[in-house]
Image (cartoon, rainbow, N blue to C red; front, side):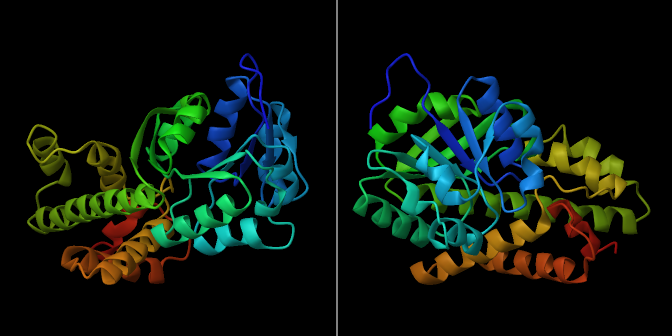
Length: 294
């Protein structure tokens, strides 16, 4: 399966949620022929209007792909689009490259890699970090596990959606680093929420803490983004709490397999679990503040 050096490869994208849609729009802006599929076809409307072709199934999307990308919510969703009826894996041609930008377990990434290899398909686990704002600006970071030569081949595709990519090791390494990254983000935002609860209980406006924080060694870019949400109580989802809760669970599962204690992560997941259980709508993970201020 060859592509002339001057031509952009056909790309297919499965999963058009908060991250997938802006990723697809950036691929189209960069001139890549794009085929898309989503479980709810209505979400493809803006991409189709911009020039994408809407496939009738994951398998049909994969059949036209030199490069297949997936970005779906969780391991069951990924297994469904790959292995279910009209699944994408059966449609991939020998020589194609498949990169998964979902956040799933390293074990599932390695299983997919083995199944792809049996079909002559090259696989990368390539979860992303950067939030919806990074997806919209084309400034995502790709955390990649797999063969370095395969990563090199699809760098032009990644460059349409991201500003940097890291080759982290064999398949599964990208997912391992992503889970560790999300642990840190969850703990940082949870720590800010807890600190704000303490400060406001002492009748000091939370803005005072945030002002000092932003000029101190405790400052972190994620807190610059999430602090206004915490102060306003506006939890419109950029990174949904249900997905952070899922990722903390995956991290704890991995830690159990490796025999590593994650006490802070375990405590944090209990807090996220409480907020998720009481939520009646889809919220950003900054809504961890609701543990202290329902």
